[in-house]
Amino acid sequence: MPTIEMEHRQVVVIGAGPSGAIAAALLKRKGHDVLVIERQHFPRFSIGESLLSHCLDFVEEAGMLDAVNAAGFQVKNGAAFAWGEQYSTFDFGDTFSEGKPTTFQVQRADFDKLLADQAALQGVELRYGETIVSVDTGSCGPQLGVRREDGSEYRIQAAFMLDASGYGRVLPRLLDLEAPSNFPVRQAVFTHVEDRIDSPGFDRNKILITTHPTQRDVWFWTIPFSNGRCSVGVVAAAEHFAGRSDNLDECLRGFIAETPSLAGVLKNAQWDTEARAIGGYSANVKTLHGPGFALLGNAAEFLDPVFSSGVTIAMRSASMAAAVLHRQLQGESVDWQSEFAEPLKRGVDTFRCYVEGWYAGTFQDVIYHEGSSPEIRRMISSILAGYAWDVRNPFVSEARRRLKVISELCARDGT
Image (spheres, one colour):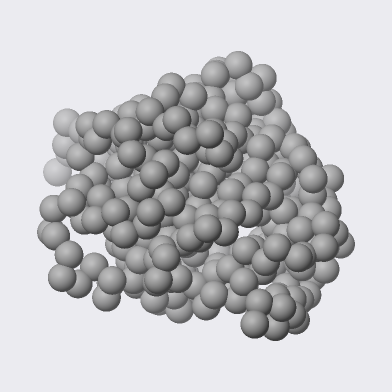
């Protein structure tokens, strides 16, 4: 039997997406040895294209903001919601929390590569086209089995590993950490189009979220990019796809045809890219950390794409984990549960409250209500901008109670 080569590294990050690139750069900036293993080659397609303002706080922390600002991405200053004749906007420059007033809408292939390249420029080593095939979290620290594209394998002995593998969910699969999500199974069907939008009321500086006219748990995203293209998708529970065309392009355009306001916005669009689908994406895990590892972003939990929270949660988890791990590598005693898992979960649970409220219709009642006070709208805008950890905001610290009260008031006003 040939001897399998063994490599010793301090930190191995699994995945070079946003959370992996941010975590790796933050640790490298603190002087640690960091290796990133990425199964794919960049650039590669991904969704999650509408960033929240809070994302840029972590991009800035990792020393990448100048490069992102210079990349020519579409500026995003808020979110717009449409349902029939109703139209409501939220401005990220007018929020309860003190955050960045704008962010970006990005084609993730370009954005993710930019972040990974920035991490490499800071001295992080990245290896593309390599797959983690085994993990052992023994008493000597984690050992990872890695397979190269030519089929050869090697092992890495690490002090710690961070799983930033996103939907790949490497450690949850290999360490039997998967747990069922309590969200219903939903599917997204989406594509990119040359949009040719000429509707006078359309704002390219905002994501447009459109509610289906009659099925309030069906919604659409329209995310404009700076190159005249946009991402368009529909999200619905499995039963809403019953009886529809198996052709994804026909399926998506059929949903849009039932929604006059969106059909009008996209009336000139050139449908030049084959639609894709992703389903059953909501996921959970038994634990966010263990001996020698922690899970970041979608590798740990993914809620739903409705408020574009995925990249924000991923970057927030990267920043938090890097801070705790730095102290641990310095020889300090740390508590991953109280210093990472629990505070991260508080913000995730805030997003969860409003995602559940969206599909129940209660949060939609608030969003589309014309009489909400400016102060309440600022508090909601903070959450939509990603500041779901700002406990000074009553709609964060008392999310469920506040949403219940305000939605009941809005529903009463609407009757």
